[in-house]
Length: 149
Image 1 (cartoon, rainbow, N blue to C red):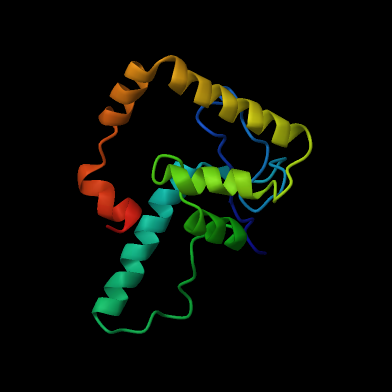
Image 2: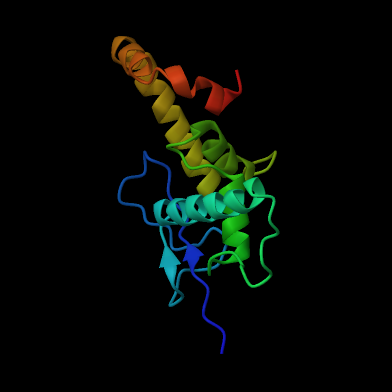
């Protein structure tokens, strides 16, 4: 009997407090399937990467019985490909915007436009506060990790 795989719950953008997406990273509804958070997935992925790296460093072949942890493969790949908001916000926002295509239509696209207009208005209405907030997020040591420079 095979074990049921865990899925990773998709996270909402940070300016949508209280919104819990009832969807996994692979696009399935949460329903009654086992679900983990993206933070939990990060821990599992880090441990798996360290284990496989130790095999590569020792120039040993990874045994066939060692498979990735019991996480949905599509969820795993999606989480690997699309970083979280906390890690690289540009990629997280791009993922949301890319879903609308070139000609956004529908209720979700209209909501996203409203939110982006509201963020722009907040920045123009309070330029001093906006400038201070931008300065608080100095990347420093993470600049090369995030932007490759």
